[in-house]
Image 1: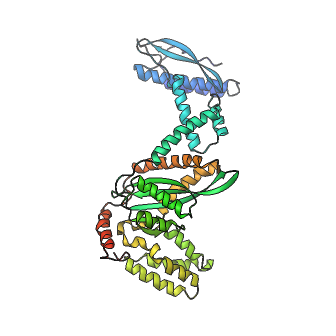
Image 2: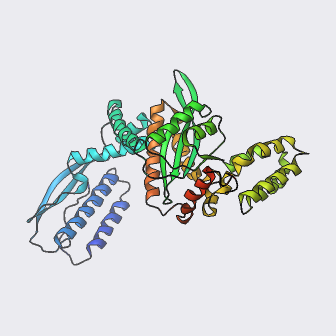
Image 3: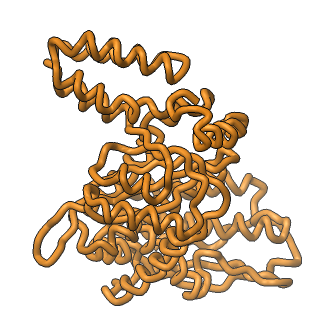
Length: 412
């Protein structure tokens, strides 16, 4: 055991002495007590620095505030560390890492919660706790901690939605879950919306079969029940039943994700022709207004139809859906034509979900994905506006003209 008692007074810099002491310990790396001695030395230095700031006097300096030392042991995986805690004549000092068990338990709870949010299994959580030098944690304890996470996540996902939300993005991430002894795929639907003030928030999470219209209707009705209103445009991929649900529940325009649509279009073309065909189709997206975009789209479709009739048919049938964003303010169009604004969020969700692999049940999906969404939403609230507020003023009168029949939907 290395002697950590206070050395005789000296005029040398205490920090220099600390470094020299650590160097001496490092030179004794062959000693079986090496790691424990280093840990003791580092903790002793931290305590001395804390006391120096507390009483305004450095180590070895005379001060009426310091009286002597009291011994205290700290149990770790390295063994029992013997520490000498400075005793003050006036006031008291206790190292933060030796605070009462109550504080340590709070810290442990946070570690376990973060581990579960990160997708760590019960067994690995137990290993983590033991690695910290603490006793193992039972499954019942983990369940209690998960209940706390569930309460926080559910409060976030069920919160009231206030104000007007002209734009709504919906995107599905597919996850594996156990269901009655089988492993099935479910869609985790994430809803993100922007307020009339240009701020972006995550407003909902739903689990279910993405192709079923009843699921979409139930999910959208849930958002409306919580207060979602004023939706003018919904951006999503092409899911069967979604478009009908949007019309029935929200009465909003649907924008088919342009990125996914382009992939579907190019699937009708040989790979060697992808670059040429994609460049031709993009000419429609470069037009200044909806009318010019429609005309260009039809012209390109007529040119491509003789060689790839299925592509021509797709362009005819989906023209209004893939160009719907062109009737909205120019300032907003770059973020309205696809679900790409959710790409980073989806990657983070998948990264966390991949750690788990197969979820034990749907509740565990809501816990993990909901915690990720809560974390991301807090970050968004601290950021600048997602969309320019100037363009928002164009929405109300424009949409009113469309609804009154003064302007057609694609020529507003």
